[in-house]
Image 1: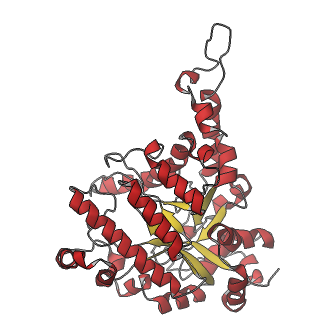
Image 2: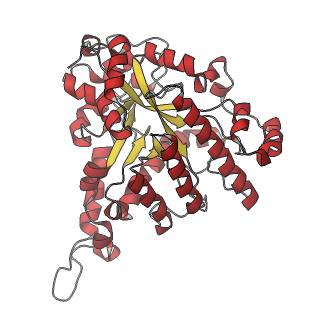
Image 3: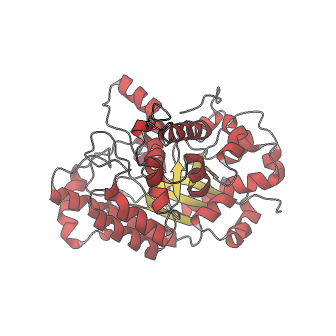
Length: 412
């Protein structure tokens, strides 16, 4: 065991500065891009601040992460790609031409991201974006992303109520699951990607905060009950930035319903063994293994800024399932206090467990080379002694929920 931890953040965000996407678009889209960019109004304060370049300034990013004790990162998108509405990647495209433009915008982001990852070999696992409205195009993009070295896999969009998209359990998405299994591409589903539009009233914003993680959790039971993992036992699903404390209870609930739904006929007259069995016709054959078994074999959690109340549940969640994340550069992330975030969560745990939670599991899921990263961590990683010391004083200007008073409140 080393005297320093190799920390990989399984949840970071990046994207190009707005005009820097243009070179990654086909020339036929350049005039339309110029018109779109001229009218685009950025709704996000963090992308207008002086620190916005953390999303695309490679050198600054590497330095700040290293100062925070982090040697590698899994990169989700952050900036809005070309041709999308100001605040939503899920808003339906009103015409085929606009749908084509949005695909072009996502491809521009993916190609920018491939270059951004290549600027720091072995230290960035970029996650490619896709749309669900055209499976042929989605499959092409998955194959391109694999070839381009985006080792983070793909970002699975949500299917919010009102989006017009089939639910994720639909057979429509079978080509996507097949190609991801074939190429060993992780399927990532990030918190916030599946919520329906609620408006801008104060109550709406509060309801969004309360419900957004629940809408993201739905991907788990949709794919479970949809039999996706029976048909594709090599598929890997990662649920990120939606908490982790909810997992044991939800798995118990899903196991309960699964058992009730697939219960065999109870007597010679064919009466159902349970009240719910009449809703479960064909489910046992279509689904295969039960929810907890599928979780153990196929699923992982990007446990961003894991909070102290979640840590005692780690064995029930699975010590090989949890991947800590800093959520850099977001305000809710732990930067520049990631060492303190690790201490408040993991102080007192066995060293081998901490090593898995903060880096080892992410290295396995996303294919990071630990021999390379261990050498970097030997210079900048947090020491074993440092993380073992309980955090007595929370930094006064820390904004992450990792440090929130009353952090024993479970989010879904």
